[in-house]
Amino acid sequence: MNSAELAPWTPGETQQSAPAIRLVGIEKTFRSGEQTIQVLNNVNLTVAPQAIVGLIGTSGSGKSTLLNIVAGIVRPDRGQVCICGAPSEAFNDWCSVGYMFQEDRLLPWRTAIRNVEFALETGSIPKSERIQRALETLHLVELDGFENAFPYQLSGGMRSRVALARSLVTEPRILLMDEPFSRLDAQTRAVMHDELLRIHRLKGMTILFVTHDVAEATLLADEVAVMSPRPGSIKEIVKIAPPRPRDVTRPDITVYVQRLRELI
Amino acid sequence: MDSESSAQPIWRERFDLFSQRLLLVVVVVVIWWLASLSAPHYVLPGPARVWDALRLIAANGDLWNNLAITFWRVGVGFVLAALTGLPLGIFLGANRRAGEFFEPVLPVLNTVSSAIWAIFAIIWFGISNATTIFVVFMTAMPLIITNVWQGTRSVNADFIELAQVLRMPQWKVMTKVYLPTILPYFFSGARLAFGFGWRVSLVAETIGSSSGVGYRLRQAADLIRIDQVFAWTLTLVIMMATIEMAMMKPAENYLFRWKKDPQAQ
Image (tube, rainbow over all chains, first blue to last red):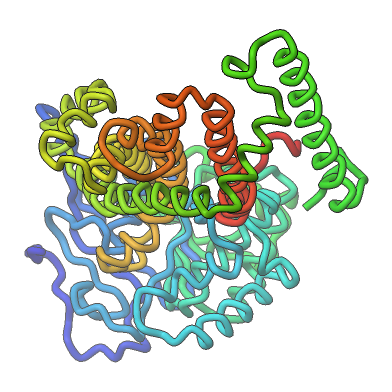
């Protein structure tokens, strides 16, 4: 990965106070056959530790690509990615990243608890510890009693919880979410919002989530970064002042919803 | 797991099924008996004659010995087919170029009927175990490769991406994502292959060996002992039914209990 000429990473920042995520000058172009599409152009974003930041924008503005760059599964063509104050190549166990997809992506042949364990199977954590941590995380998302259920036996909301548990079981410092609740019905989505905020209060991880739902962004985020259409860059960052939990019907909240709608 | 369809306890369901099957057997035997009354015993022996013949070969050990020999040959041929078919199928499924390159070979293999393999086998291996094993192998292997190939192609890219995000090493992705996805396909391929393997082993044994059920079948036919032909056929049928009920079905139910049952909705 080549570093940009822009703001360099300054050594010496302690990992505790460094921004959880810092993106500088990110560019990304995809090539398929003859076509080249520049998806991201000069994206700069800083996310403070323990903050909840929403990422919104029109379809195709590169939101998911940006998230994947933070997750480390896509390499940017240019720019710097710093996770917890260190370049993302120097991946440290202290600052792990959890990822929750839009679909639950539960392995259908595994029970709920085995699905959560999956996230712990990359390394060499002993089986008993994996089970222990998986059980605790399932308890965290309030799915006690369903450990041995197969995905086909669970409702959409429950499967979402298992997916959330899977992304949390690694005790991530940073949680990335790509429209995690868009497939759920409105009621279940509301429940999951409360769940997420509760877990955030408990665990204090940094959350960067992508969403199409402006109301959802307003409900959850400290700041909302609005992306411009392709090639995407951060158009504006809207700080949402009122403390959580927020009531989307109240005027001091709806003003944000409107502002965000205008910006997209 | 909710099921509004049946409030019966499971033992009751099983009993009903068993009595249904039993009734079916009785019906078949009665029809057989009626038919046999109108034909000479060397054309269509009745159930009583066949039963006697069956008892005879069971008592003098003939039945068990030959059954075991054939079973062993089919088993070896099948295991060899699985051991080669599984990795080959995965390779062809995972590697686009190789898959495209070798794609025409499979239908050709499938077209070559078992009788032709039997003839080749006799030329190459003479009258021996290898003949039967070879025929079983050549019949079973394309079936297994095709199914495993399909299974490998069907691996969900979303799961691969999930494993990537979790920084899983490639070999773990293989064992934890690819293999479980391929298993149902392998299982149906194996089941087919096993069934076919039995059928072709008889063909091979009739011309290429001096023992086994197929050999005995031909011998009985040569001696115009049609009651024995029936007896051996019956042996086979009972054995296949037993394997299916006692091994295949329970294995299937356990291995794939995670699948949504469309009939239960």
